Length: 172
Image (cartoon, rainbow, N blue to C red; front, side, top):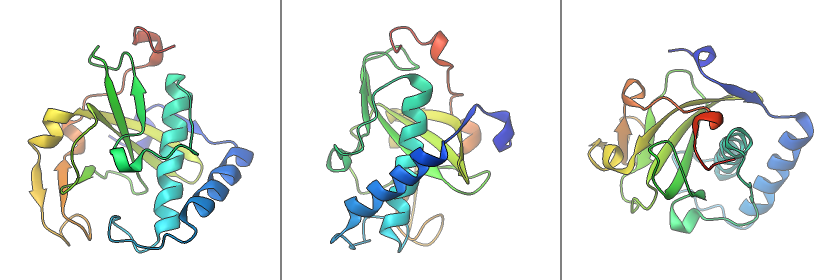
């Protein structure tokens, strides 16, 4: 599937600027990149905020970037998500077409669902979702294979298609 096969949202320019500013403020004084798959902590944070903003806009949930849940390894808590269960959501965002869902292997899996988003400039596509079991059972790859850090990889073609909000009971 290509980027255009999925629902996507264009981040308004003003919101994009705000997200970049938030990412910059959140990363001030925290330049330790061991936890990220990039040497640019601010860029990784910005990319993540973009994915989270689009997820929140698409599913109609509150986006609170000032409340960082990074230590808890999830981004949102929802009452009803695609499988119909109550749970936590972790949103991952990539910037290259065709990429897979990668989750850091040494982090505790606290989310019940992991959403993959794909960013192209200000357009962000909702690619698919994996359950915690899918991520937990995913093959672990060592540093340098898919990422500079050790990751669990769920292939893109194994992801559950994202569900449109109108079909998700209780989200809106």
